[in-house]
Length: 205
Image (cartoon, rainbow, N blue to C red):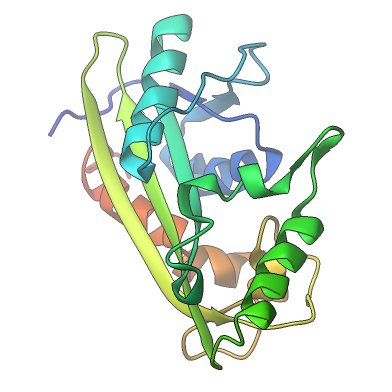
């Protein structure tokens, strides 16, 4: 396990929601986080069919372009009744000519479930893979997931992505209804992040 010994990290993402969450998670470690979007980097083509594969593409691309360690987050929602879709294509399902439209994507998922008469509860899980890559090509990978189910209609405006229809197991609120600190403590990203900070960031706090 390679340790992170710097004070600046590139987040290999243009997603402002991810930058907010990961910036908040890294704040206690005294690390400045700048996004690939802020640096003017374009987004590499994600050609893999796994979260790990796409996380590696993004992290290595940003690390080589910036000359700094880069952290990527490839995440998505897997719906059991849709054979794991949207999965790694979660963001693609929201793409429109005018940018990403997640309410449209959520309605698409729900309409497919309705068309299939999928049984209730409509189980799903959020998955997250973090990849920390260095400019020399080394990387470390950390995975997390949180189980739950989908509900309709959408509820809450505190999250992003598919948060308004995802209810984590044992809870009654959607991720988008939860106080962000409560969500951050239990999300798929938090599970992966807990592994991450016990690895390259161990001993920094």
